[in-house]
Image (cartoon, rainbow, N blue to C red; front, side):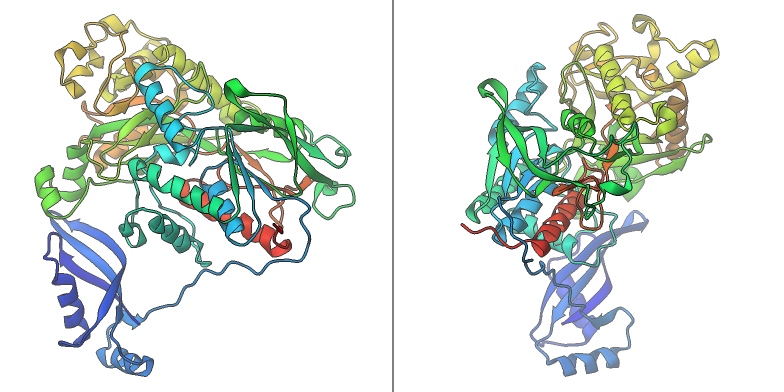
Length: 605
């Protein structure tokens, strides 16, 4: 197999142009060959001239020695032998599991951990507080339409985890040499995701397609001997003896807490309880291996872990706002083209962006979870709190782009070294956002946000202005297709918008964050406006609050991937502080499955 890199064709090229380019590059004439696209990206450095850049693996039908001879003759640095990368699950260990492994959480980490364990004979039990996909989707749509929330089945909780109601981006910053990354993509593709995720430089599935893919993965887990119990919550942990001494206010682990120590606690099982109206008494579920894949929003479980003295540490994360723009603003900047029909004719989709800045305070300001052609969504999971996220469907055709523009925060902003201080910081902002929007998503034009903040700063008083008399908040000109949605006439009434899922309300968002963070946000937006024309202009819309970019804690684990204070407990994925998106969470789930399998023998039927 021969790999060719840097094959360039103009966007919108004919169907057979790539094969013709391959033949010309290899000088094979009419010889039979087949090829697979390994990588595809867009080169827009000379826009509006846009180029498709391909890497392909070519099967020429030649013997290996003949291929090597051809490569040497061509003397082209972009032609080489195709590297072989095959993922391999480890051989099973010999220790005996007295009970089936238990996985808490059916997000990407939990599902991929369960999939690999079930396919290798471990028959895991997955418990998930939320509902299966069909019921969960109905609950989320009902919440967006009526504001009636199910705290156990929503954008954060339920089959597929928080990533289900997202753009379905499959990017990862991990330099993976194990093959896990490609294996995750292959599994998604085998279960209904578009084949393009196997080679696109910025692959995505889309929330509509994910709702079909995730249940197929669950059914494979069940067919291989695993079990998934929905509407089931973990309410407590049981150990074989008490921890010798408390973890302390920061949740730090002592030497006696490390796995292998004579004094380390060993997990015996967990208590589970049906959630919702059918909840009964907690039931003990014995287990000697429990994977804690709870996601970043299972705050009650984090509090229970902390009460149990499981070692945890405070972790930096980021907070800020979702910012929406007409997709044409981003396309013009990225492609040099804003006409959707021309973009489609070139075989392109809505363009993404990634921006970073350093504020004068030293804090980082950056875009996160960018959703081309998507929606800002009300992603709340706790009553009396509001937070937002972004999502888009497979076609990315809403006509609006959005991303989180966030600022890194840590102990200085939390005001405490307590391990759960970051979580309390999140909650305080989400509660303030709820009160500001009266349950709806609070929104503001960026120019209104900036001028409102500067006016308050000049006055030396960070308090909310009178919205009735604030001419800078004219959102209706930016989005409304219906004159009745002119919120200047009724600024406290909620409204729907084409860039949002869930009701919105005009509000003084410039008073939501602490003053120094708001200043950093504006500084970042102004820098981004110099890179993308119009980014900081009157068409930009700000929504808040974006507070759940990642977990505010890390549940520490050792070389065996067990908790440093509880043998048999395996912290995993985003909620435990070891991932930051669908891909990295799924890969961490695989890694934990490998750790369990390499130590224990499969569970007999």
